[in-house]
Amino acid sequence: METATFMIVLEARALDLGSLPGVYAHLQTSRIDGKRTFAEVYARAVEFGLGAVLYSEHCLRTSTDWFPAFAAEVRVLPLEPCRAFVGTEVKVEFQNGDIDTVPAKTELCDYGMASVHRFPDTNGEAIPFSAVNTAEVVDREFALSWAALANPQLDIPGHMFEISYLRFYVVPSDDQIQALIERAAATSVAVEINTYYHPTPVQMIRWCQEFDALITLGPNAHELDNIGDNVRVLDGLSAS
Ligand SMILES: [Zn+2]
Image 1 (cartoon, protein in one colour):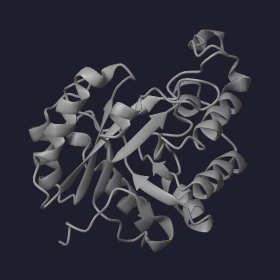
Image 2 (tube, helix red, strand yellow):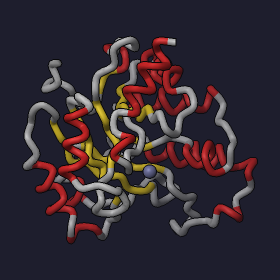
Image 3 (cartoon, protein in one colour):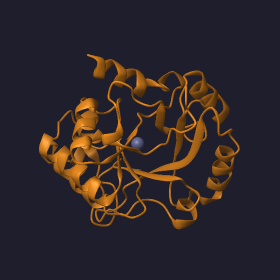
Image 4 (spheres, protein in one colour):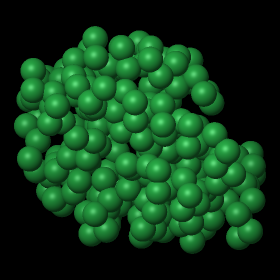
């Protein structure tokens, strides 16, 4: 297996849906909320035959105390057979698309991911989900993602529409998903195809191909058993 050439960000149009690369672009370790250590995660990635992984540790703009050590731990992992990249997953913090990071952290990352984990009010304070009208959820999530896609510190928007799908059980329109993909293509941001959160990942890849967008493949891997899930799931879907 020629794994050493696998990269985290891929051109959607260059992908063969019947033979997706072994890439895992969204995983966390035991440092914050994952269940396993760096070494265990890396060993599992190698065992599964992955060629590239992105350690996207959850953090805040104030995490500069531990982030350099985290980045250093990833950098000492071997380049082959699986190359490990340094990343971070932060929240979209403000309505204008600012994200919860600072240059001292961003500069240590190969890729910066930001996700809509909450709905900020005009001051950036989280609006309790219990106070959010279900009818507004998709539009709120869309607006935050739209704003963040223009943020130059963002390389990957994590699990788009996750709050809508998983917390409120509402589904965005195809037009809204496509509009975000088109904007991501315009701003050269990679769309995360997340087989855990997105109910139609293959359709999303096809839309990314249509708009000539960049993509990453990666559900959250907090558990070792989840590593490689995206490849397994996408292989099954594209074959069916
Ligand atoms: Zn997340």
